[in-house]
Image 1: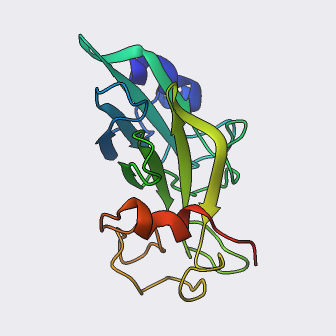
Image 2: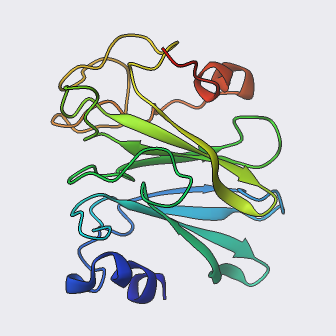
Image 3: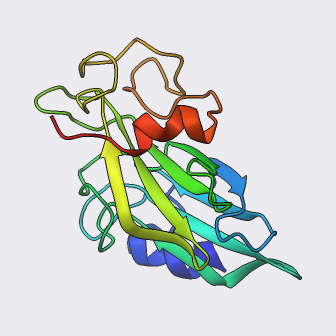
Length: 193
């Protein structure tokens, strides 16, 4: 249902088949209802006329299983989502979810290893999407790069520091380690440079 309808809107020439849907996934309770939800990456999805921008679908859990009718598709072009689409951004190449704020709803963290930062190509970034009792929301989202205050290092091309989920040709993205709410607070509250 999601691939045939929602992703076809992202990549009508290929009816969603070239969006890379399912390349990444994360499972967590994003709405605090006690049922896990699934965030699924489509990192090569075409958004509007932008090839390879990327997308993430959040499929909410229900008593009968995952509900396509309560799903939400997000892209860097979604109103309120921090950042912007760019050709080859690969938003959704890395994906994780967890309760970073201690409010019993899991935030979704979306990696974009091909993100250009300043003039540094493939420096990488990640976007944090907040969650509420209604599920994942674009409100309050933000992008973090190595140029974000409080994050070690500076953006490089390609980045080789940290233990990150990335390919040798890709930039910095979501860390592979789990963090407690206290450890994550500096990342969740970046201060502009």
